[in-house]
Length: 115
Length: 85
Image 1 (spheres, rainbow over the protein chains, first blue to last red):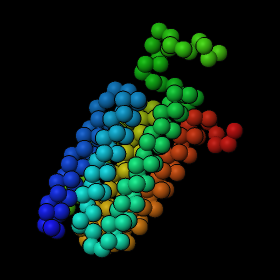
Image 2: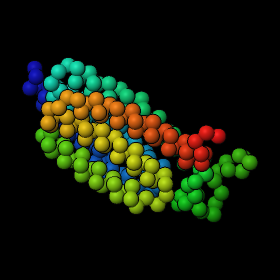
Image 3: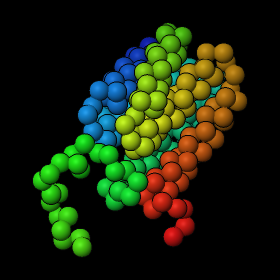
Image 4: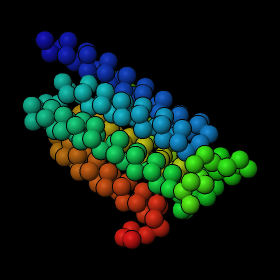
């Protein structure tokens, strides 16, 4: 039973490393802040969960596996919350003046209703 | 295998650090730093599996909580210009 679990865990860890690499390439290559946030947060959350679930058979004791599960549950709660806070701070911009699509001539939809 | 995963995460972190250095605005740096905190936590987990040291998992849990509070405080600061308003 244990070699099968370790094989599945190693497959999960390699898939998680691939997802993390894809997320970082998305952060490097995407043109805007919101698209960077989209690519980085979603793919990196999936990659982190895959790595944590895949490394559970490699933890020596059941206490270590419980700690890994605790980190996974905490990531599942905290990572969308942090990305939402960053996106809200970008939307109600006070210090972020140099966005690419905010400097265009066309007015943003719903901007005049906020006054 | 875990060593290969470690090197993959290290290379991912080095690629993400480029965006932290050359981000056009502060929001890009904030997004990239958020991604780097998750990558560093995964690096601590894989390192604790590789050198078989169980207390690095506690360090990873504490770092995850600390980076979460860090991102919330920085987003609040960049939104309002000050922390308490």
